[in-house]
Length: 499
Image: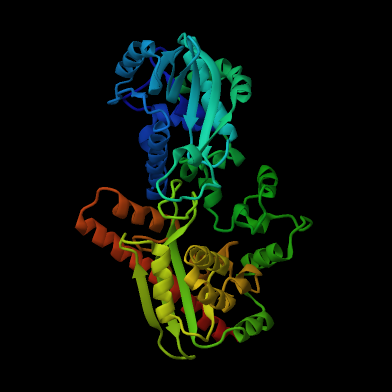
């Protein structure tokens, strides 16, 4: 199973990223060194996060205008030699590279302090310090100190989520630096022993037998889940699909329970969990017609089925925007003027010009009338996008207030399990509800979920991309968002049929 490019105990070294992988799961670490071709490539959404992380790092470096960038070019030996040569300059070093005791680390920023000491400044695009960040910096400190560098303090520089953009981005306010020296020292005491164990793992002939557990998603979702979770995901009704079971699923799993059908009768379940288990046991849906009738009564024609697609960035793009505040780049609107009529469709996709928050309010005001229900799925999201846009563009506040008062959440009868079909397998997502109720689905679509839509939009709008590729993706985005609102039309019609 080992690849041709094998690593041996004598030539392998660990970078800080691989060290952190090893902390999460030794099996994942082994695969990175011995069977990397079996690890799935990062998807569009993950790659978009990587790209944003690079942008955040580049902006943080502007806080040190006299800093020196260490060249890389995929040659760590060259980077290490260049770092050693530049240490005597006593200037901030970006990506300073050191190799010691087979540990290799590159500091985002290594800042000189005093006569011969340095501070580590690690830059993260999160809005808070996380435990894995402290392990990351502890590894760096271990590496640098064993390379002969005196470290004074360790800092974690992250995004200030209270920042509001007013004019040009001010990195002095956008970033917050927290002193994590004590935590880095605490974790640093463990590094040597953990390195020894990880090198043993890397050099093993076969990967270690590691059972699945909460670590599969902590601190990050593991790319090996498709491989490791096969025995669980072989069952559509596996216990991890049981609605809001959470961490309790692991105690059942450890008892050998894989499916909802195997849950002991005496096991305490909520009412919604009982509905799911019964539906999966009998193969029959749970239909509460009283609740459905009450919900349908709350709908008043004309019906406006609305869905937004949004994107967010750690560095705010627009005036009066905050880090990670979602901005709409697309909407789809299907209008039913009366029962039994064919829906009218309106769509909009931002072209990158102007502020999309202002444009979306203007376009919606043109097509949403003054009466009738505005139907959304998980409507708190659409309401929030509208309200946040109106906070910036005050002239639209009255209109937004009136529209949000008319919003009805189509998720409600499904969230309460008043309607539940066996094929939903514990989720009330429109992606599961649509095929369960109507037989239609999102399968085969080039873009079939919101995170991919956001990542693809950002890729073709803000990265190098030719016109043909941009046009192709915009067409796929239009089809996806349009299906979201047409799906709501179909679901409402199905609910009407049920009663």
